[in-house]
Length: 352
Ligand SMILES: [Zn+2]
Image 1 (cartoon, rainbow, N blue to C red):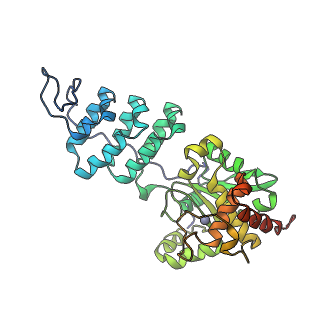
Image 2 (image 1 turned 180 degrees about the vertical axis):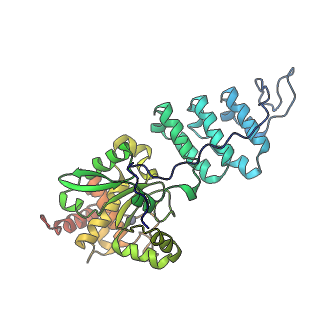
């Protein structure tokens, strides 16, 4: 049975409706507090918690501090640690009190590490802080979606209609991208010649990539990798094939990789260049004959290491060198790797 095809470009999976607010007693009337741990005489003499004594917390608006106090009172030790990370984040104090309240709302329903990380990442992101209040609210709610409900790239591939973009004359289907993400992808790919762009099978942007295993970075899913997934994780493959979903070769980009502060400012994505480097390498067999010594000082810092070399596998180092080549300014820093990339790219046929 085929899944329904959504006409919208957004994933079909939506955040769950907002849970009704737990009924909490109204926050206590909190007066200005002293650093010595006790409230000034005349109000209650409740000692301040360690969290409340933090200068970052004391600098927050009254309503936010009251809410933090309420949350802290009910929280486990682990949850207090998470709460502390959130409310002492560099960007949290710079948000409007309404956004702080929304973040604490989300935290109260999902006081876990993943949600805390998502919220802290948002608060510390300048592009987020400078976006419209409505967009901020939407992004904060998005952070509350539990991992199992977050849309993986394969889900997005099968449940959304692609946007077809034409870059340097080459049409490319992009699934699941927001207008801003689409702009970053096309703006980045414009740096590449048509014969490289033709190596891109299709692009999927999603909350998670690699069958839900990662919520950051990107992935190149080749024909061979599709088969690898099916061998390596039969239960996943069975789940998808039972739905009749197509497991097609693709470049996957996590939303995280396209929403980093520097990416949002420049509209150029390292991740897009690195993953495209893999696709171009595979299509034109560019790393054949390339040895570890040919790649100069390039050190691969990602997760696809095989332990064969502390600098990373040749294909990963090559993808990073490809990325640096198209970011520019690479030749002066690393002439050996630069030469290797130049020579390899010279083998790409001009009109395939
Ligand atoms: Zn890679």
